[in-house]
Each structure stands twice: as C-alpha cells, then as structure tokens.
Amino acid sequence: MKIICVGRNYAAHAAELNNDLPTEPLIFLKPDTAILRNGKPFYHPDFSDNIHHEIELVLKIGRNGRHIQPEFAASYITHIGLGIDFTARDLQDKLKKAGQPWELAKGFDHSAVLGDFVEVDHFKDFRNINFGLKKNGEWVQRGNTRDLIFSFESVICYVSKFFTLKVGDYIFTGTPEGVSKIAQGDLLEGFLEEQSLLTCAVK
Image 1 (cartoon, rainbow, N blue to C red):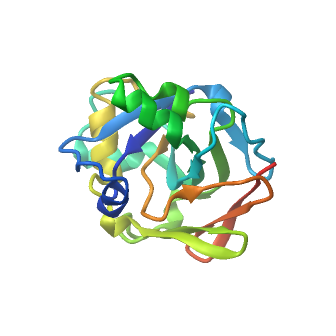
Image 2: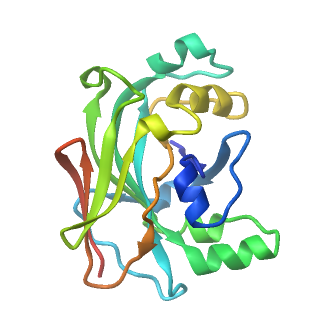
C-alpha cells in the first residue's frame, strides 16, 4: 500500500505559500506509518513549532495498473474520501532552502489522517466536488475540484508512468487555500459536501 500525494494542485494554495505553479503534477510519498485513522487524536510532535493542516480529497485505488490511459483512469477509483496532510512547515522550509527532499516534513508518523470514504458511484461529476475543513467549529478551508490544476484522471495517468498503482493505494489530491498552524487543543472536522467524514483532535 502506497500513500501518493500531489503538491500545489490548487493555484490559490500555491499563491498563499508564494510557490510557483507546477507544469506537471508535483508528487511525493508518505510511508504507511503516516496513516492516522478517523477519530484518533494527533499528538503534536516536538520537532516542529509550525505544523499546518491541509485538507484533501483522497482517492482509493481498486485496480492494479501501470501506464494508465486517460479514458480508463476513472475506472481505477473505487472510493473518494477525506484526508489531512499534516505538514511541518518550518521543517519543510528549511529543507527546501537546502535543496533537500521533503520527507521529514511530510512523512512523519501520523501525518496522513484518513477519514471515511464514499463509493465513487455517489459522484456525478469529479470536477464539481465540494469539501472543506473546520477548526474549532469555524471554516478554515473550503475547496471545489473545479479548481484543480491536475484532475483526478490526469494524476492517475501521470503517477502510473512511474509507479504501478495497486489495490489499496491512496492518492491525496491536493489542498485548497486556508492552511494554518495547529495547536494542542484544536479539533479538526472535515466535510465532503455536507457530510462530516473526518474528525481529529490535536493533543
């Protein structure tokens, strides 16, 4: 099982961090030890003073495939759900300045929160899915897939050129603007359309 993530896939999020827009999907991986299941608390690590929440739609892969063609890409998705990509922003900035990989800032233990999933047949249009995140009862992030730079299908095609997709893989598809620092005592709640599918308390 792989956790595949897409960075800078919403233009407004790239802009809020003063990052250039990618011309190809920006891909990174998280290890399976990064997974934190829905409802379990996130214990703030002591190696970072600036961990950000990044709410994302997550694709669950239901077929094995490589070099997937665009007309078949959607058939590899069985479920869509919510996830939080926790990012140690201070550590990421340090690594970026040194020209080093991001894994320490993105792949640390429990940095990939997974909420509940909905069967893909529930969705009529992949380009019009609303989602968002509340922190302590207030909206902090809201997004719609119409604003994706790279669609679900194009991400699947691109990734499968390099990695064989396998049953049970997850793809985090990118976060909209509104990322911010978390603190102990925060309660995060993720929504897919009007449905609450993810909760995570920060300890």
